[in-house]
Length: 295
Image 1 (tube, rainbow, N blue to C red):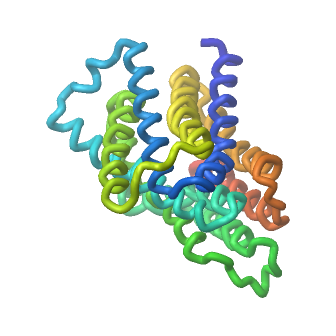
Image 2: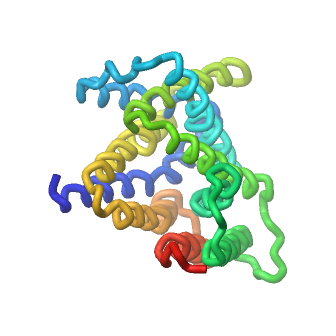
C-alpha cells in the first residue's frame, strides 16, 4: 500500500474519532449512557464481523477457543463495556470539551501502569512528561476559572473521565500480550462487550425509544467504535517502518474535536481547555520523542 494511502486511512480514523464527543452528547440528549453503549457496541461488533467475513477470516474467530474466548471476555469487559460505561457517564455529567481531552491522559497512565505490570523502569524524562500532562489536567479541570482559586465543577465527572483513561491503559497492556490478529480480537471483544451491556441494560434500564437520538448512537458504533479502528489498524499494518509517525498523528484528534464541539454543540470553549490539552499532548510527546536512553 502506498504511503499516501496509509496516511489517508490514518487521517480518516482521526477525523471519525474527532466527532465522537459531539455524537456522544447528541445521543445523550435522548437516552441514558447505558442505552447509548448498548446500541453503539452492538452496531460496532456487527460491522466488525462484516469486515472479518469480507476478509474471509471468520475461521480465526474460533481458533483455540478454550484460551481465546476467556481472553476475549476479559478484554471485552474492559473495552468496550467498562471503558465506555465510565467515559459515557463522564460525558453525561461534563461539557464535552472537558470530558474529551481528559480522556487523552491514557498514554500518561500507560507509562505509570507499565512500571508494575511490564517491569518498566521509569526514566526521569517520563516523570517530567507525567508532571507536564498532570498540569494540563488541572488546567482543563478549572473550566475557565482562575487557576489559583479553582473550584472544580462536577468533580465526579472529572474523576470518571480520568478513570476511563486508566481502564483504557489497562486494556492496552493486556491487549498487547494477546498475539491474535487485531481485527479478530476487536470483533470478539465488542461481541462480549455488547453482551455485558445488554445484561446491564435489561437489569437497570430499558431499550431506548425510537427518536432522533438513535442516529448519533448508531453513528458512534459505526464510526468511532468500528470503522475508525479498522482504518487505523489498516494504516498501522501497512506502515511497519513509520508506525511512530502514524501514531503521533492521533494527537490532532482532540484539537479537531474541540472544533466540532464548538460548531455543532455550540459550547463556548474555555481558554483553559486548549491550553490544558496542549500541556497533556506536550507531556505525551516529550515522553515519546526524546531519546529512549535519556536519564
